[in-house]
Image 1 (cartoon, rainbow, N blue to C red):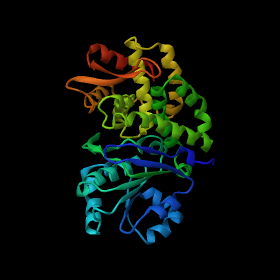
Image 2: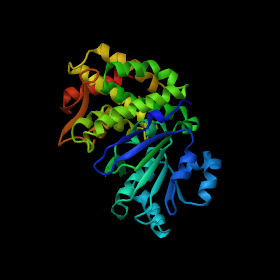
Image 3: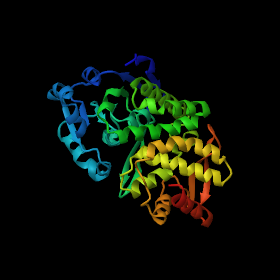
Image 4: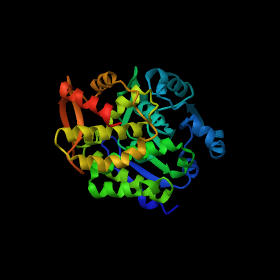
Length: 358
């Protein structure tokens, strides 16, 4: 691997500034970082896969293993973890250190934000989705009932350590999911960034140096928005591009379709609607779709009912009243928020998409 130090950076936050460090060996960073009575919150899969690296650290430190499943991201799922922390002496001056992907991040961040009205936490993201996207931005989210990310707030980690070595044990579908999610940043950033991403896509699946550069660029694009709109009130909302449709796909497939792959479908749906509204040409849509198809090709969604899809879309947390708030496309670097009614015309477009575009 190349020298990763050049990718290190800091992020300004009104809650507390935080730093992102790239590393070739997470265990060295963890040993240097952990202090007495800090608690590790670790994905059980990571505990098994990295048993040899973690064992010497876990002997002397407190930890809780969690199952990284959507059910864990709920009030009910958090109760035994919080109980464990309090009963085993976790205090306001101690820190939580999360090692895992997005679910581990959400669980830890949400707990850190509410426990004793806020405690410090650190994050070792272990999936491409969390390394290239969710690790920065401050968002904390848990699910409510069967609806994704309905509850949460903003509470960033104090430090983030990115080790691409974790990706060696990641299933291929989760690599695709991470690349699918990162794709929306490059479309938001502009044509040259997207063209470069598209050109490097296949090599990134094999070459960690190319992948590390993509991760760093994705985070750089996101950083530029979150530092001017940390709480998702205006400019940052463009990053919901593909997500309203994507979240509906995730929930209706019971998360069989991983998040970034669902978002890839969602971006194409947003582009399809943008073509219908005359915002972009179909040629531009197909130029982007050529890449998105490579992400979703092994995850068909023909079994989704259009009626159920409309219901799921109507429950999206970004909606206002009966109006959908969708992020649509006027061209590379021109992603924007639009208000649409779910009327007969919109319904016909959704039916056309599911009947003809899949």
